[in-house]
Amino acid sequence: MAVNTVDEAKERITQWLNENGHQIRQVDDNYANFHFEIDYPMGTMKRQRVIQPKDYPGLILLLSGVAIAEDHKERLSKMSEEERVEFYDSIRKDLLFLDNSFDMNTDQNGIIQQIQFSYEFYFDSLTKTQLYRGLLLNHRTLLYIVTIFNEKFGIPNMPEMKTPPTATTQ
Image (cartoon, rainbow, N blue to C red; front, side, top):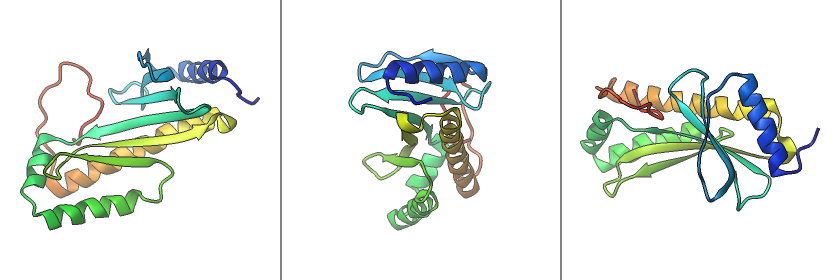
């Protein structure tokens, strides 16, 4: 059955997330008709967001990301600019042809601070399979980034967290 309205999309997505036992937190967002933060994979401290932006009628945006560990940022800062660019380019080439998008956020010195992943689709393809396909693809991309940074720089020392993190390269 086709989805034609924001309310229908919100109702279906909420139903599917509840059926699968996810923790759902509604996020106050003036730029979205609805914005959920969910645990994905279910029962973990990793989080993804399901958003229907007001400025993009009919779009569903699945958003996730990873903050780069301080140890890894320190190691990146010790690399030459050429070495960093080569490392970043290898990541870009690996991610380029995936169905999700990515954005590497750097500081003024060219050191990656975080990487954000997004998967977008429209109401005309809103199915439970499509929703979970996007969530899985974002999660696999996060796992790839964590793995590639850990292989390059080693497993970082992580401070103890008092609140659940979204994700880190650990």
